[in-house]
Image (cartoon, rainbow, N blue to C red; front, side, top):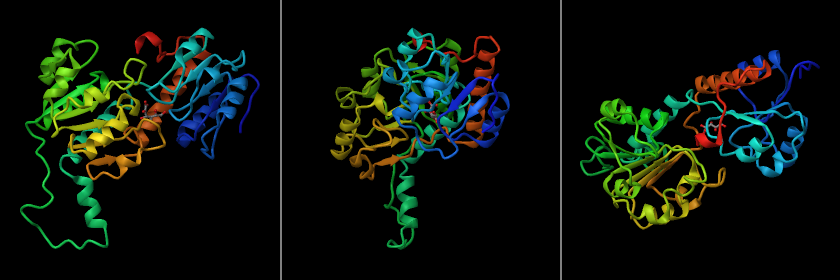
Length: 332
Ligand code: 8YV
């Protein structure tokens, strides 16, 4: 790896796109992880002892135990990702370590995948595709009563978390003829509500009883942990679908699996899971579930944009400026 005495030591925990890594090596004394093997907690401790800047991802748990062992040089955690629930923000702040993230650049990609799941689950897209691929099943031709799903047009979508991604999902969903409902800590601007013809529900419970599809688009924070609790999941209509491209921890996954098995919820499109990379086998066993491996933001363009944001945050900080994407615990 290229090294220089004067440049800040930047430790990157996972393999990033080549173009991002190359630029980082030009600008900083960068330690890459070209093998892309996730670091153990002991390796993360080693990293925070030596780095000026750590660049972790969602797979790295930068918790209190790691941060309390950080060396005096560690001043910035430039997270490669928008969600920062992998970092203990309070401990970082108490130790004077700044945390930045990569907001905005993965909004459209994540909203695309959310919309894809909203379409795919009620229309049984994965089942149809798996049937055609399976050498054991020979398609005998069209039938009027086979592979019937449910219509998307005219249904009600309830979005939990109407930030950037929630609004981008709403725009797409409106174009598909869905009626937009949302629950958010704050009501969005009147212009936005008008554009989306969106109905605000202060009460999440009230919204859940009325919608046909729920899309989770809020961050995972202590306040949103199991926001879709066992009690709330039971409020959904038995014909309702749940789509989650945010964080698994927002949903009581066990109860979701139980309700799907019982036919008390019609289906789920899940890109994220409560205990990643472990996935509840009951969810994987269900025909009513489309499970994806946390890939909503997985476009090469998105990853390069995320890398550029990380670089700008590090460079700004090292040049003595406030990094543009600082995360304050109060923002969440
Ligand atoms: C990223 C994500 O791929 O940015 C986020 O919050 O959930 C993902 O889409 C991941 O976090 C990278 O660290």
